[in-house]
Amino acid sequence: MIEFEYHHPASMDELFGLLDRYGEDARVMAGGTALVIQMKQRLAQPGHVLGLRRIGGLNSIESTAEGVRIGALCTQRQIENSPVVVRELPLIADAFRKVATPRIRNMATIGGGLVNGDPSQDPPPALISLGASAVMTSKNGERVVPVEDLFIDYYETDVQPGEVLTGVLVPHAPAGSGAVYLKFLPRTADDYATVSVAAVVSREADGSCKDVRIVLGSVGVTAIRATQAEDALRGKPLTDENIRAAAALVKDVVDPLEDFRGSAEYKTDMAEVFTRRAVEQAIAFIPAGN
Amino acid sequence: MNQKVRLKVNGTDHELDIPARRLLVDCIRYDIGLTGTKEGCSVGVCGACAVLVDGEMYASCITLAVAVDGSEITTIEGIAENGNLHPVQQAFIDNGGFQCGICTPGQVIAAKSLLDENPNPTEDEIKEWMMGNLCRCTGYYGILNSVAAAAKNMSGGSK
Image (cartoon, rainbow over all chains, first blue to last red):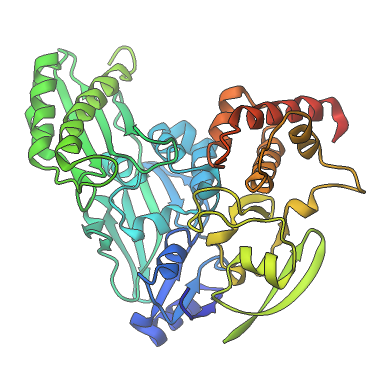
């Protein structure tokens, strides 16, 4: 483990002062499940770690007119068990419940997970499929970034120097839509996904696809929105043939890394299979009468 | 550079002067001297190092002691009361819940954490929760039976 100094800022102002003073030599820490391991492995070597635990007001979950605002320091377990999230954003509760183990979910936070920029995490595909945004706060004010645009490259995000992710705004799923998050786990229940897919589908009165969002995880350097597949399905009848044709298009946009979970070719094939299953299951979840 | 860290471990206050890099598992084992908590994988996966931090189960191998300054920590040494084993400990003995024993402190802490939150878990809920604690002796059925037995015994009001 590297040597560093730990700071407990008690307010955002104090945090911004420390970020100013230490610049690139500082790292902000929420739950620490990712950063502590990176420091043990010397992948991250900050001279100063700025812990957020003593800053108040960052761990609330509030219902708003458009959806739910989740504070950056909310733990994953807090989110999966929140009555507000379970009621208003069942897709999000389900995605968080599928992360690792209860012990990790007790520690890891929504904000820490997002700024870590790991493309294999479960929450990003689900959050992007609902059009969620991240609130970045700096001493100059707030900036709202769609989660879809947050991830730049492998473990690289759009968080700017001096900025801290303080909350996530998650809109409700569109009225009358069905939504699902599928996580393919061929090895162990606590593993990262081999492939994961979030799908949100709504239907016109004539049975055609009114709107669809498909987002994949673990099959590229960031979570991937499959816009070609969405465009191929939108406006078309939701037939088996059209769903299969749309799902086949994700093979052109995924670029998985080969690892012990499978070859790149295998993961590419599974991306298609799980996209098709996710769309089919999302349709099955559309409430009766829609 | 050392930093001051205050922890209440199993009801006893400790004021420590330790480097920020000190992991909670090392702090508990070497600074405080309670060696019941084990380190297995060192990356938060195996569950051997599980402790309760303010009542929540944490992986102490990826927790900085300084980050939980001011918290109450419960380790395996802290769950028996007045010399009586905790019902979870007794259930592991009665139901063959361990073989070599290295994972057992973490298994017992995990089971206690589950039953604190959900006193009457279903079999699936037990499996889902205990899935995060690995046993290289593959004694999983003994573990699941132990947790189920503890839940049954505790719901009788023995806790």
